[in-house]
Length: 312
Image (cartoon, rainbow, N blue to C red; front, side, top):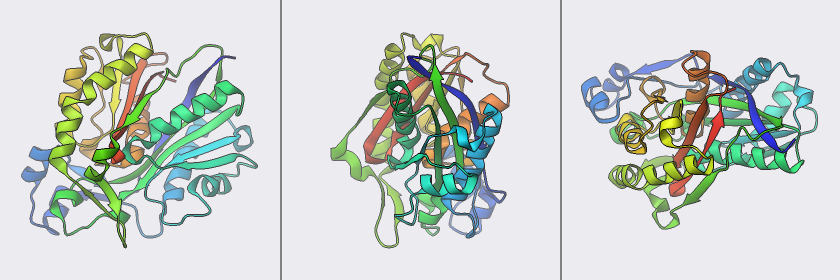
């Protein structure tokens, strides 16, 4: 075994749906204003009794079931999140306890919106190095906990949810080499800081960076997998907003790919957005087993990470 693969995926969203009309009753906004600027129509919002680890555990349990595995088959749990309230126990340990994984290595990864693709690369490296046999990789965020619901520029963006993948050893590499990096001097452009912690961003700076700098980086991630963008069957970008997703996908040149647009119904779920959207594409049959799919996260820190994976 000299590679790794995604064996299965799963996702979870809270039951409560917050519409643009609902938001129009909370702040000075409208459905037309929101959809024309960010393309979001609905988002799911967790209740006060639904912490990040609960969202993550639901998605993880679905991925495990889809893989036909038991909790005891997992020896590494990685949770990508930036909205955990408590420092310890971390979310990975809490997820392991919730679903009965007996003695895993358990780590949280905080790279905000690029967290899942960073965590997936970490699991790939661990499995290929022999440090783990099977890993649960989860992206989960409760953005509603860190949102200023009186700020119409940010509260219209966010949603809560989780997505998960089971990564295991494979006789061929079905998770491509990661391309990752950051622009630390622009890290202030996306923030979750303060007491209480609140999400804020410099929207125009993020938009310019994402639409001008990231297409070339995404193409390099394809090159590392030995593929051209037109070879891709699917593209799952961080679901920031449609005004970023659509031009980025167009400039990438993935003309034959299904492009995930889950942001329209789920909002920006930060680290959850990529596995959530990917799992939905799989569930809906819009991509098939073995298809090459680009996963590409970007956002806070201005960090980015992308890799081409084969659809489970």
